[in-house]
Structures are given as structure tokens and as C-alpha cells.
Length: 212
Image 1 (cartoon, rainbow, N blue to C red):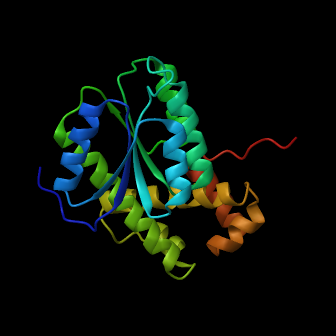
Image 2 (image 1 turned 180 degrees about the horizontal axis):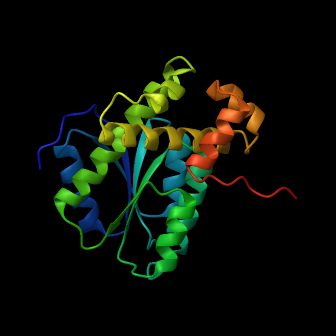
């Protein structure tokens, strides 16, 4: 698989199987990334809170003490995303239950790898996460009007426009998460009107939580 070279990332591998951790480390380091490892959810969360340079996590759902289930992995995913809404988490699981996959999506997993997976499959998932991380960094660092310009740009080809829409959707979801779905504050941070934000909510199928 030939993919463009992107910048080096700090990646945390959360996996209790020593052989799989070694395989991940070998692959990730061959791609030029720095790798940290953890065998359980508690230590992994402590590492995240103590190191803000970690941008991507590869997470095994079956972690001790419940290695034959997915509760520990889901708990870590929820806690990690609460700590950092921009964090990308690639879930790796041998679980075939629909419930596990649905819970991962609901908790904000970026991608899902089903074991056994291939080297190319892992490489592509990492590269895809890199692209979104880079795009979100650029959007957050540029003029606040830029996200609107990106979505409204009809001169690009369909594939690029779809990719930009996906980045915009993730940015809006992230800002809504950070503002606890306060539309006025989210509109201010995104530099769009409330009407424009409601348009994007409808376009991307984003539902606001019901008020108590």
C-alpha cells in the first residue's frame, strides 16, 4: 500500500496481548510514529491525562479484568473522549456482537478494525485518522470563517467535497460537545449564524439532546 507521508504522531496502543502489542509497535514505528503502550484501561487513561501529545489510540475492547467482553474498552473510550473530544480512537476487536459495534460508534470511535486484521487494513485506518487530525488542526488554526467556506466550496471534485463535509461534521460535533450543545456559543466559536448552524445540524443529521 502506497500512501502519502504525513507527520509523525504519538500513538497509544491499549492491548493486553503482548504479541499484538509487539506487532503494532513494529508496524507503527515502521511508519515513523512514536508508540506508547498500556495493558489496561486505567493505566491508559492516566497516560492520556498526563501526555497531551497523544493524538491517536488503538484500543482493544477486551481488556482486563473483563477480557472476554467489551465493557472495559467501552468505558475507556467514553472516558478518553470526555477528556479530549478531538482524540481519535481506532477500536480493534474480535467481538462480532452488534451491541459492541453500536456502543463504539455511540461513544465516538473513529474507526473499527475486526480481528484478524491485515497490515494494510491497520495502515489505512491510521492514515485516514492522520488526515482528519491534520484537517481539524488546520481548521481550528485558521480564520473562523474558513469552515463555512470549506463546506460551501462547490468548485472541488465530489470526493474532496465529501471529505471536507466529513471534517466539517466532525468539527461541529466536537464544538457542540465542548459547549454542551449550546447553539449560541457553538455558533460564535464557528463564526456562523444560528440559522446556518441549524442548517448543518439538519444536513449532517445531528440531534441535540433533549432538555430535562
